[in-house]
Image 1 (cartoon, rainbow, N blue to C red):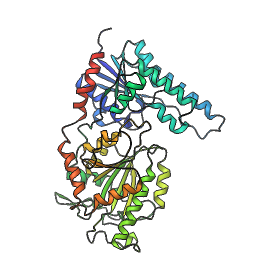
Image 2: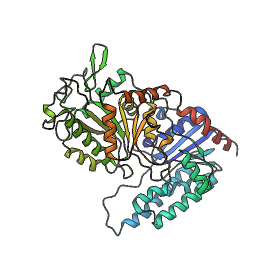
Image 3: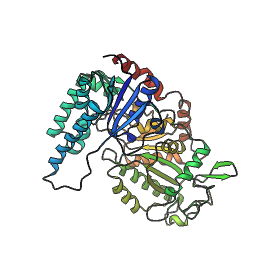
Image 4: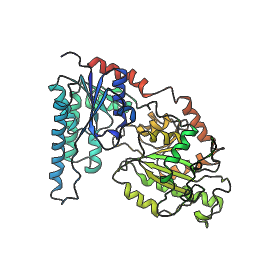
Length: 466
């Protein structure tokens, strides 16, 4: 069959929480001039550039219903029924509902039933089949069932078998490329995650506007007033010219010298990201600064945050994301008696999230790969905004984080606390290590972008197959 001028991007997940697949869709539409059908679940809105592109068409599949807690005897039955339901829904969309594509590009994981259905659809519709390996599905399943589980072994067999039947593969790291080649017999092209153009440092005007929009979330602490809500921009202050970070006089906007340091972390609130490390590090920072300043007996209300400059700033951690363990950790946050550290959890739009990263002082990444072979895309986005990062250390993270150049690595809460103390001493003017890392990032912030990398590594594979 001749070329149809069409591609299908397949995600058995929330398309709004699948940024890499959104970027694939944009590149396919912009750089190969194909019509693009995204087949995925709804839930979170994708970026506006995806929604408004005339050549991108989103098909939202019905999801397996969320059921109340089931008796133990029924759980295995429903665990088996869910992939069967997903199988037939995905089969209908890929084989019947969407127009015939030249190529299917599918996100892995999840592998079952996705890879099986896409392989069948590609055979039926005479289309090319490309897998974009973000991780290994069987390693994620092993987090809950254990590596020795029979289900994990079967899952790995299906994942490997379907992977070898694909016409082409992309992957996110050299370590994963090596694993696929040596142990799976699959040749893959490395396509590193890179930020698209909307991840960039924010201007003063954009920062002030963002802080005004999210002021309700910033000024509402967990259960009691804290070091941010006690400031001049507390809940009692509705002045749109003042935020905890910025002041606007006429048309002039300036950053406050005694503002809190803004630390951002994005999490899926799942077991492969130990949020407890961040809570413990925050508590250590709080206690160490108190001891250094001789303020152990003071409550947060007694510290005059707006009256003078301190050697170590207040820290405001804004944690974004959705996931199963969110409520568990929010309860833990409420129980902490922190005087110089505050936490806020929120979900931001696809347009505001890049602005938050571009307005922050430091990013923290808690991602620990289930396979040890993938890289956290959230760090890529932070780097695109010129934001230095402290990240959990694991096997291939140095493919992304260049220690002391664009970020730091840690293996424990104590190490993270040490890094927070070192980076924020003298904030905002005298924190030289933080400034140096930001300067290094700013030098390359516009030189390496998703479109450039996709053009060099993904486009040749796709155009060859179609």
